[in-house]
Amino acid sequence: MRELRAYSFGGRMMNASLETDILKGVSRSFYLSLRFLPVPMRRPAVIAYLLARTTDTIADSASVPHTERMERLTVILEDLRHGRTDAEIPAGLISSTPLIRERQLLESYSRLMEALVSLSIAEIGLIHEVLKIIVSGQILDLERFGTRTGEEIRTLANPQRLEDYTWRVAGSVGEFWTKLGYLTLREKFSREDPAILLTHAAKYGQGLQLVNILRDLPEDLAQGRCYLPVKNPKDEQELMESFSAWRQQANVWVKHGRQYSAALGTARLKISSALPAMIAMETLEQIEGASFSQLSERIKIPRKRVYRLIWQAWLESLKASGGSYVS
Image: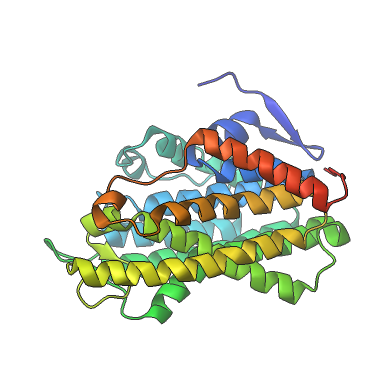
């Protein structure tokens, strides 16, 4: 563990290990977006993200019975509601988490709760609101897929359930981000009608989640779950036809991210919000026309390309903001 240092967020202190080591360890690209956020937004956004990753890690702990995971997710919501700074994740659940970075995240839970209660009441309210929605999606996921047996592959019953799932676990995050921006930055965040911006934000979040679902299709199938609403997930032709159709939908939704970014008030905000859309569009280009075997090789955007996209986003944002890079 690196030496712990204090890191200032708008006059309040957060342990650098929590904001950098833990955050960077569990996020490949979103970490970069959070780093570009203006100071007033950054701290609550980081805390919300780490709490959401905590519940996501628990929901994905396949070696733990799904009923136990559901119970723990419910307990976390109660911890949030009551501001329990002494709450901890059970040692058995932590030890069952295979990745060391995710174990470190779960071990940091009480520190996350301490950071949460130091926020304003309004910020805490927004975080609690979005976590309730995210956890509802994770619990639905466990109810649908957690009881499968043998080589059974379960699918979502219809397109509406896929759209609902993407909203719960990601579209709601776009809405949270927007509400937090208006709360902490007011007119500096955006002069756009909040209702319009919230619509863009929700669709954008759904698009990012759908890109993840498409990219991870082979991995999910291996775990007995298929988010694409197909009749027979073992029919590769039907599966890839559905994949192609949902890739087009993801493209439509992700484009809302560029409209969203354009409506924001400063270059920092534009960079932070545009970068995930640019990475997602690159991913969609790579998976267009891909075969199932090619998807199985795990498509990723090279780190070098991500840094080029950061420069591109920075230049575009500066141009759109008239050269103003306001923190």
